[in-house]
Length: 458
Image 1: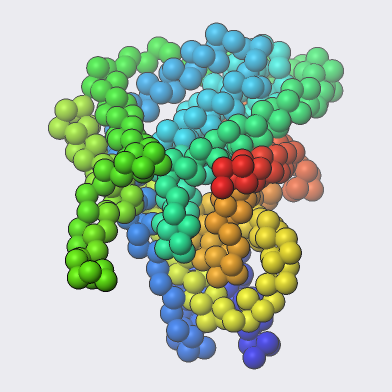
Image 2 (image 1 turned 60 degrees about the vertical axis):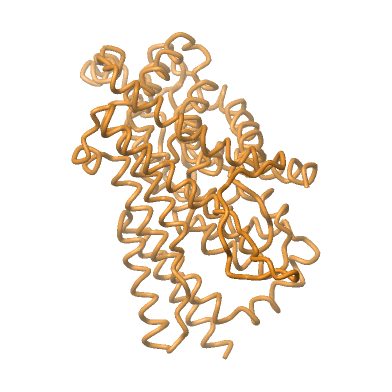
């Protein structure tokens, strides 16, 4: 049995590894090959695909994609650029804040590609080594995922935790992750402030500067969206989107203070006195309703084009995430559900003494999976089955971001290409890249602080 179990685990890992090498839709699709081998080849009982989480992602991504089609995303990027150009000397600290809050607002880190060339341009023109703000800004764009009330990772955590008996809502999750992750990012920014050689002392940069063509390439153009005209309908789409988020937060806040205003319905169960047990609508349903309604309002009142939304990067990247989570989570649940007794026996000793050690498993799986939402969906049920308390798991939630470790994620690759100075690099030995230090510092500090906050609250 142990040999078969190891062989099947290797099949799961191989499917994740091959899928991550191809990227995009391949991550979910190739997971289907592993699923077919386990179920059709070995006769394992198939697990359950995470349908509730997928529905939330589709609703949120549709809303964000419609806002982008209306031009609202351009306005947000423009506001961020104004802030950065007003304080160029502080770009190493302000750039990650901008990319972080853009992700928090929209729920995906893929909205920052327009901002990255601007960050590089501002740093270079100010004489600041672009690697410093660029490396931590790229990290911040992904860190924001566990801090967004509509992101897949947060939605997944809430749905799975409620099913496991840890009653928590989106607002309670981000109340822990936002301050913790901001501390982690600022620690990474502080260590990046004097990182590497100054440009006037960097022989590689000076050699590039001595080449007239390369000098023109680096300093000849200016990346900016400030001259882009923003229509009133674009601004209206942002107001609608922010309003939708405010409604979601309001429902969560009312739960926290003890005035739950969610509609209730008959659960089908009967209390001891014979009266029907009423059950409130889940927050996952409310998020879906509000997001879809907001998308409709943008189409009706902000002149957003559905066809343009479908062709936009936000909607497309979101649908890729849906497929990835669908395949990865189904594959993982199939394996874990069939070997739950063995896994519990092997891990119980460790997690009973050091429950926070589950963060290493979260991080390791993220290195392979390239999706924080997929890590939560695949690993959180296993963590709860090991009787790890919900507050502990909330505290280690920032550790689900580990795919910066191997620099093959689109935001990191794009940032390297956007940096015309050549200071943001992958590195000769692959792991000595510009994102390793800020990534490790951010995740470690964020996880420690989130754990402390969770302990204090719960």
